[in-house]
Image 1 (cartoon, rainbow, N blue to C red):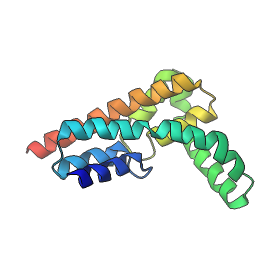
Image 2: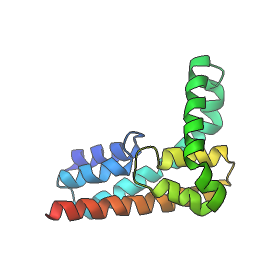
Image 3: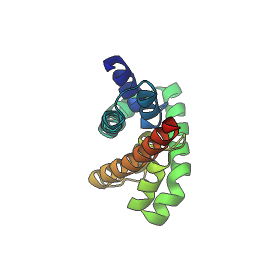
Length: 150
């Protein structure tokens, strides 16, 4: 059980899954669904401060390296294009909506990059990402528990 919970946490921190994969994984492996929800949500929430640290310090150092710079610009453009309309039109709630949509390409990684690019105040950006992650995690949790029940 501990190993399965650790894998669910790693999925929740991973940019390839976030809690959208961590929660179903943990529940499918038989870990208590409430524990999985809380732990995967918190793990996914940790991404915001880690990403902000990366964007503030490490990203600026790596931008001097040409291959990294081209990839970083591509990722930034994707995050900006995917979130631009929602954030420009709805502001804080647009960022919440963008992060909460449980689809690939949305989530806390893209939400953090978008909030960084649009220069949204840190506290507001964190709250918007946290609310979005919570709603997304609850959607995934409800669907997974419902499907597993059948």
